[in-house]
Amino acid sequence: MLYRYDLNAERTIESCGHCYFKDRTMHPERVLPCHDLIYLTEGEWGIGMEGQQYLLKKDRVLILNAGLRHYPVTPCSPRAKTIFLHIYPAAGDGPADRDGAGCIPSLTDCSQNPRIKRLFEDLVLFADNPGPESRVITSSMCRLLLCHLSLMSFPTTDSDPVLYIVVKSIKETPQHFFTEEELSEMAGVSVKTLRNRFRNRFGMTPRAWQMEQKLSLVSAALVTHGNIPLKALADNYGFCDEFYLSHCFRARFGMPPGEYRKKNLR
Image (cartoon, rainbow, N blue to C red; front, side, top):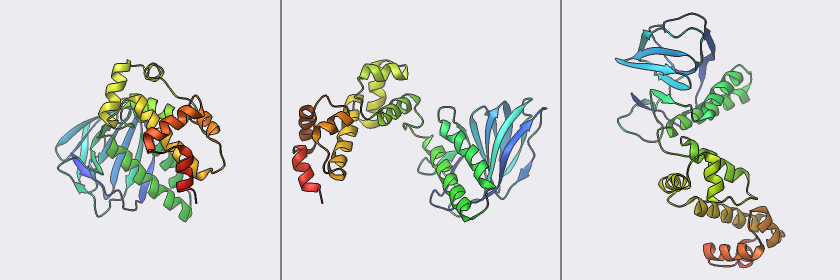
């Protein structure tokens, strides 16, 4: 089942927590006023909803929607562990007939996106904290969780482990200019595979995308750090010297860095 969630709506948690089942246990049959989000951290569990049966495995998320009947299919395996969130629905939530922003299938494999589990864990920690700040934090984190689950349906850097590793490394190491060979070795794939992933997602090669990212950072630094010399910027963003940086910058922006700085500096 595909369901659309209003990503702009404020969210409230009714209850949440970690569960451990020493013995094989059937999921209860019930209809809840909240969306029941289950992250299975260990084991397997068969659960049904509105005529559809789902096999919940490790690092998968199952969403049992508010107002719909869900029921047991098979008992969980011994020593199964889950994290659950009961989140009140928003007025804009409802069934969807095609993919789009906020659309999430009932069952999602999150094994390649560690952020999902961290958000479940953090929501459990924050939910019991008193005060208005806690309500703001949990609402924002719920919306962020729904956004990430929605993005899992599309080929993004979050859902593609190769792109996730490479993009994360490039962004975290602005002072280094990686070769495609270094990036492919880092991700455990061939250079050809890496290029295909980048072209499919970004429409350019890994080198071209990396250059675009660095020149965007340089253009921002020219304006925000008006006194920093071009040689320092070359060192900070992985260019061999200020002359090569100037050449690349002119090719991208149609003017040398100094002229760009004078034009945009206020």
